[in-house]
Length: 196
Ligand SMILES: NC(=O)c1ccc[n+]([C@@H]2O[C@H](COP(=O)([O-])OP(=O)(O)OC[C@H]3O[C@@H](n4cnc5c(N)ncnc54)[C@H](O)[C@@H]3O)[C@@H](O)[C@H]2O)c1
Image: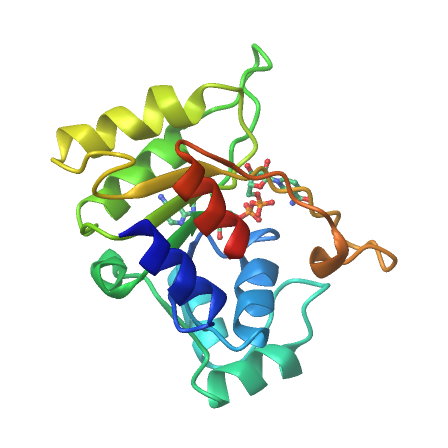
């Protein structure tokens, strides 16, 4: 299953999904689409979905012309309906993790997003957590939810963590130039995430 997925990603034939189209998610969706992959963004904000589908950017580092060109070319679209997850090969989660008063990340957005995604996941997909969080989140928060839904991580679906390192406004180091750390729950998950 996974070598097929890695191959599909590497050949640009995978359909990628980005959940959370903010400072991290929109630039990521645009970069993936610009590489020639088909990309669907998902967000709970209808104004953001409308903006993307109308070719308008609301993020300083992403020019509207770039979004418009990718949307017009059929490479980028957006939806507020998580049912689109069923048609994706990869899903990157880029939702907020604001710090609580105790200085620990608030994982409620991650939990909400992951639960909404898992309802529509099927075997053969790769789920990547990008949100900033503490070590152990993938294993302690994401994996048990997949198992409860009857999807065995590393067997039915692959899972990886790849913390976002983007630096909005930085003209020298843009998302494409910033090296990323990728950690899969299996070597195959790491390979598929690395290919993406
Ligand atoms: N912005 C940065 O410079 C930066 C840099 C490195 C890491 N990060 C990390 O990346 C993650 C995302 O940050 P951001 O700055 O892009 O946040 P953001 O607030 O700009 O965007 C998050 C998006 O997620 C959407 N969202 C919230 N709950 C959702 C849900 N349940 N389902 C779908 N979409 C949902 C919001 O509507 C919003 O559009 C955070 O963990 C943050 O710490 C951010």
